[in-house]
Image (cartoon, rainbow, N blue to C red; front, side):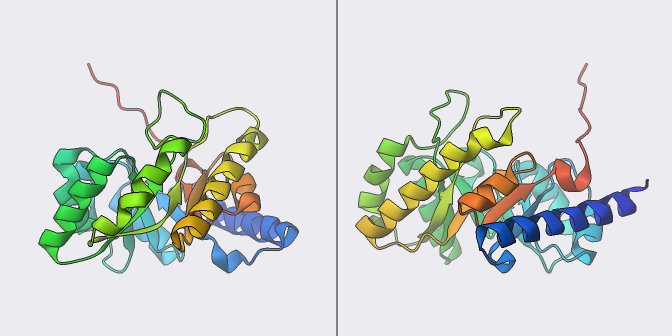
Length: 235
């Protein structure tokens, strides 16, 4: 099977799975954004994905994105979903339409300053480490309110949602409590701060159906669409 056939078949299967889980969960499939995660994916495959109707693409590394995006179609949205280092903030604000991985007040201030320089408002999601994993970035759930208490101090960021990455387990349903926790945090923030938080960025190739059942509005799919990434061996 060539790459074009693989992507076409994979995307058709993903859309069918989204339709079926939305039907079961009494949700509108139109509420679900498919983000194509393109780490190590080249411009040719991205062009094919665009031709198949995808419009939102996610990158984990700023430098890779800076090199790749100019060689890709211009009518798509690029979202940053990886850990954002402070020395890459200006470049990320200049290049991406949204940042999904804000994990500290310090980073939020840096994004605000860069957005002010660019004369724009930067949509962001706050990343929440709902499971408390030491290997993952993100706010502890109990620390989220400290940032939301001060969000009015920043005039150039727009907190539009929350994002999480649950622990990987062989059984996708194990992620359900973590997805429920994120949505509960969203509802509390809506009530306490009057934020809409329309974006719930959760669910990846392994568990996106569970995420949709629990309220996700944006699923981040890489391997499911493009196949497993090639590992780079460094000598």
